[in-house]
Image 1 (tube, rainbow, N blue to C red):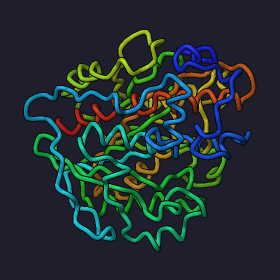
Image 2: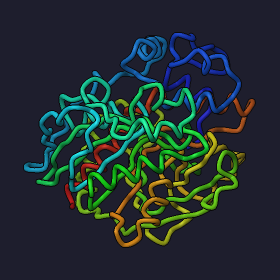
Image 3: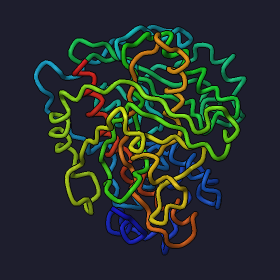
Image 4: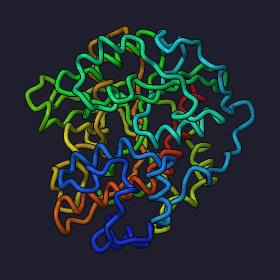
Length: 382
């Protein structure tokens, strides 16, 4: 699928090349006014469909909010069982668990918590996590999300098929924290405290190539860096890392569960969303971590084609951390849902970036429901 401004008009009710989105429908006025594509990347991180600016976006467009979410019919005995409130105070270490599940943006958090911790929302209910925040935040640049929130993230616990899970919504981001890469410190600390057998990093991503549609989910044990900007001199700038093959036992059940909320995905989708499982030796199908707000275009502007199936801005840090842990490292997998497909190369690059950002704001939470269900399937198979 290749999308353009007319696709946005058909699926979100406005043409971004002809109609200006109101400033009050942005998480920040800077993103509404700026010509810097990096500001649009921050907009994706901060956009909250349940905040006042999110409600303004929903009112301006035909997008739907999570109030439309329908509970899925879980297989008997494998439904998520929400844990008790985590112990206070917020400065404590995370509890130990079989699985550590981490997501990144505000709307990804809404979707993941709605699916796997029913009745507990990542923004409104999850407990703040501030363990060693003071020391780690000293490495962060001012105004990054973690510094603004004064925490490293929020969390809750759940259980699936008897496996205990820590679900963590991170406020630390490789793309936002600064050149000292404190997100690596956060990963190290989370793994040391939870001591999981499996780590899952999940959320939205841009599809690479024209075969992907909104809601498709790429499950990859391979993550790779494509650093051409902030970390272009780092020793890991083009490194890749691989874990073991994920257990796909319940993937057919997960695809069946997609149907419950698939009507909220774009009407231009030509088929139901699919799960794409990446083989452990298929480097060209990996999850690509960029240090710039890159997205696939029909003219391959960012040279992402051939590097992987999807691009995002952080998962390879987990691979880096696990490579340094060696034999002590847990298994890991990246579960990334396509929130924006390949963008047609027309207009300015900023125009194309706006299209990608608006599609995320319209459908990022709904495509994240799909990846949350895949995370459920991976945990159920443990």
